[in-house]
Length: 308
Image (spheres, rainbow, N blue to C red):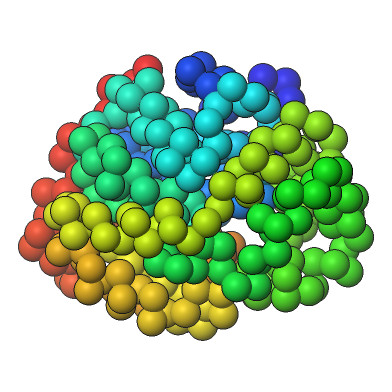
């Protein structure tokens, strides 16, 4: 556990020993479970500004470090295809005996969550998809080079070393259109340090990237009409990577979905608009008496997960 000397905002760090390897996760608060799913080349620290507000509203917030390139512990035995990553997330929920879960997912984590919704809906109570991959946008056009790059031996090491130069973070093919702000040094090290330091993490990232193909989300989209639980599409209205039109397109596929546009943000809503996103999550999860909460959400957060 000593390797996880990161923000304390997410709560206490623990380890879930799953069939494919150990997954570190942070646990904060008590109440109905909310599980936060990050995307590519970031980790649970993405949610450091959101979790405190959600936990304070009466929820148990769990933030796993998924093997998407910024995780601390390699998982060499895990299947890291998109379906395999969804199965890993489902196994995490089962391992902690979490039920009636609210999943909150951003960026690539939203893609994995959509696949989970079609493969393992049994423990999921409701879903918040916050500006993420959808339909044929997996990966999105600006990052379509990543699966191709991953086919080249040694490419992940080269990429990790290149990203040490801060000027590269201003490029559209890195972080320029992901967040309106700039990450501080501690956060950059949390996100990019593991890939730079660990050959095992680089191997995991390479396996995951090589499996990213649009057919996975297109197939999921065909099956999503069977997911009739509440879904909130919390989308950055200025998103340049995942246009807000994708949110309305998803809403047309899902039988129980609504769209909330959040202004003044790019893809990383947890970074650009964390308080607004937290408010939306709390209200949607059914524990807030906001005047505009819809009736179908009133009882959404009753069942609490059992603490492992």
